[in-house]
Length: 346
Image 1: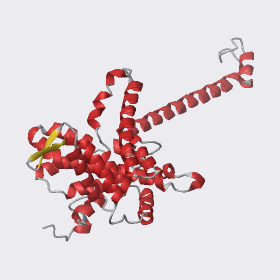
Image 2: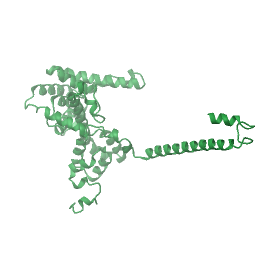
Image 3: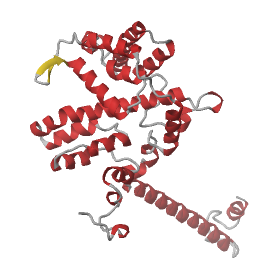
Image 4: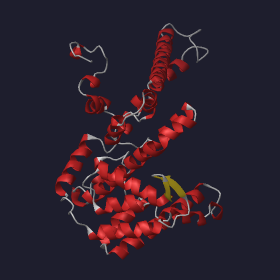
């Protein structure tokens, strides 16, 4: 600033080098050179920033969102806690009279469903058949399933045909109204199931766990869960919350596998392939690594298997899944991998 003032005070013009003394032009030229250098540097930084942003936009979406896509229950740090939970949980007893009672009560309610579906050459109430199929898949995925998980599988759609009485038109035609409508439907189902659970004689802790899973209260999403989401008071792991998250994931896997078992083949024969792929991609989007392994182990035709490979969610460790399904050779990233050069694929 002092240099600029001295330049302005010298010469006839006061702002330019013309007509100034012999010392002024050199000082003015240095100031202009510094200004040009700063301008060039700012332009280079702007170009570098634009280039970096362009490179980021050119990256694949999965690579850009890698830290988000990896935040699932299949993460190693979460799986360690899941294994600890399994070791801490005792095996269920051979006889569970309370569970048998609540299942009988749920089946008695669902048997009143007016909608019928074909089952084994005859017909059966839709909610009754669906709850039984879902329970079978849950038992296949988790042979040591707890009472709460089996109750949720059997009764999460209890008397759901009555939900038509909660009309969408009774709520505001906006997003808050839609969310309130969905919340009221969840609350109605949860209260209906809790009524049956109380009648069967379960304690308050079991009722609270079932209600939290039905309502999604204070529970992280299994497909977006991190270790700090499971930390309770005093820095200890909240294994009750982890148990609820595992229940939600098991139910999601069972529903997706039940969809493939009952609907996929019929849809494949009746609908165009692109529409089938769209529906399957939506229904299978919440599969865990264990669920994907179970899907790939099923017997499908070559065309069906090719379509499923396109719509299944790509997990973080896809090579580990292929190793579990088809062996070590299938986990190679390329058929010509040098590690399996002498492997007999036949």
